[in-house]
Image (cartoon, rainbow, N blue to C red):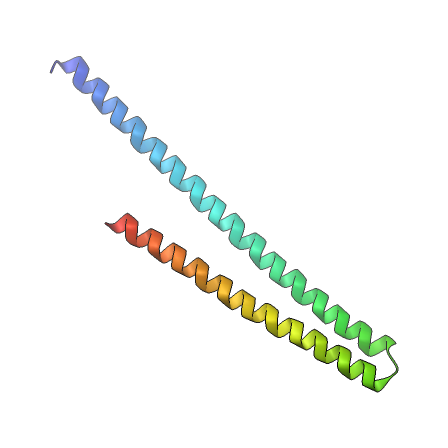
Length: 104
């Protein structure tokens, strides 16, 4: 193999590595964006639930309706927490399996 071909191969290898690095950075940025969006969604949902509870407290005068509404909102909150926990577990499984594959 002549000298020029060796440098061409080295240049191609460097380009491939650079593409892999850029791709990896883009993926990591995407993951961070997804995490931030997910966190913001959770925070907004929590704020909405708190607003609903405050609105019920301040506007509903019938104690029975108030109590039942709070129970419904509380049940929704519990379901959202369960969903969050399940989603978090699935994300963790995916990221752990990805990192294991990369190590191999």
